[in-house]
Length: 243
Image (cartoon, rainbow, N blue to C red; front, top):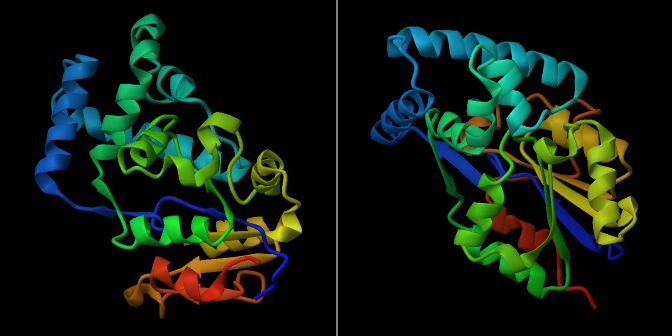
């Protein structure tokens, strides 16, 4: 391993956390979302319309590598026909429920042991994530007692740009004061995570893949990471203690 590496940045979705299909949890989130908005539409029709708007937003975001704030997401894209003064103040709640209606997000079982150990070994840790939420990820980190381990949390919803735009990776490196060549990135998407980090000049890229997806992911020369792992704890084999 390159001993000059000093910082490790990680993705969140499918890297630090995974989504499980908890039907009761998802159903409750849908019910709460409808209640919060106060729509008079039948629930199926309401979510059909919301899904169409969500797909239109996602298409634009992915094509342009941009992300809007929670406030703009709800007032301009998802609920443009509702009063802005009503929607804007509850945009954070709406985002949380919208994400929850697709599943419960839980940390990988080895997060709480791997992250503290990497920190103990002397690495600066941070997060770089494409996400529509502004508070959910910091709230999760705090509730799981991981706040002190992450020196920088760079979210697309806060900085307005998405991976694979190299600028979001460069912004993270600037925040911790480490040059990109001395940074590593751990993610689950070859096109976003490997290409983006490499374009930013990161010194190491690591892809975490579920065992059942390993054969379905095509890794071209452009997308091929330096390492492929199946569990987060395998990072401890890649990053020895810094002297």
